[in-house]
Length: 273
Image 1 (cartoon, rainbow, N blue to C red):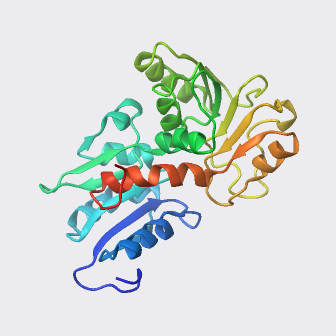
Image 2: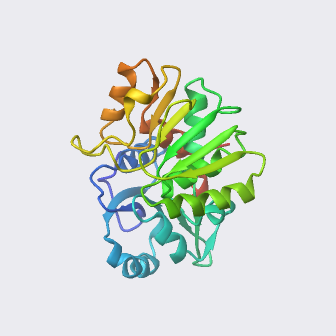
């Protein structure tokens, strides 16, 4: 198969579900992977609003040639409730970003954003063990990153969210799962001063006129500033951080470094060893 346009009645389908959907990079990554390996498969974007999720999932179940889905903002928690079974990481925080169909027609969900974030740090030569983290956003991406920092042996994890109760619920789960890591919830407008790593796990930055999730003047020059946003490739937050001497990690790192894990989870060749 030379590309995603060469489809037939035997082509297997995969896709990504989100709202909005124009910013996603997964279709290009997966379709390039399929073409490289000569797989008769295609990966499609599905734009589904919150009020249509249950109906969409019923539709996905009925599509006999659909084998797996990637789930993106803002549906990671909702699809966890629609899955038939959750993996360990998804069960911890109640969110997923991948679903696969089993041979007996069950849909299993798992969460890989956090693995991608941590491995992205390591791919850039930054070891998270012993470091302090400020994560802005307690949604699907923030929950995944927080949970992945427990086995990565971070020293301290602070979760900030515009809805303080959401950060508190997440922190209680993380504290119970990893009592050796200091975990704290804070409200909106967190102070990034003193943290080794500051990670934006909110949608702020997808639009150029979005407000910044933190005050960049409060960043320490020794900090690494990361963003979970894929498009634009370099957000205003990262540009402001670079001006202040910070190292930065764009969202593409998180995608690239979870991709092999998702490929393996979906049962496709060429996944993680």
